[in-house]
Length: 84
Image (cartoon, rainbow, N blue to C red):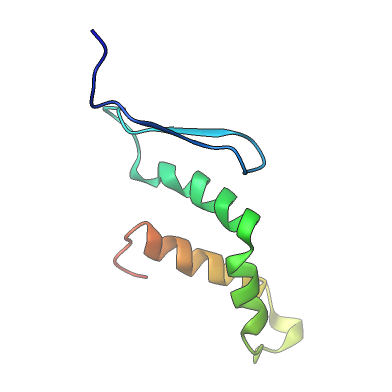
């Protein structure tokens, strides 16, 4: 008999069809980051945010682009990391 509590969601508008199932017993809590990154790439939200931040760093000393820093912060908050 099929499990009536099993849910599967399909996101057809992303680059690749992505199926999300919430029935795995032993998984990493960071698995949702893959989906979050795909959605962000599709919508361009962090890119738009990074484009609005005034760059005050010295150009010759920059190792990480602003987009990478914004994504690190936003995705860390989304995953519930306490240090974000």
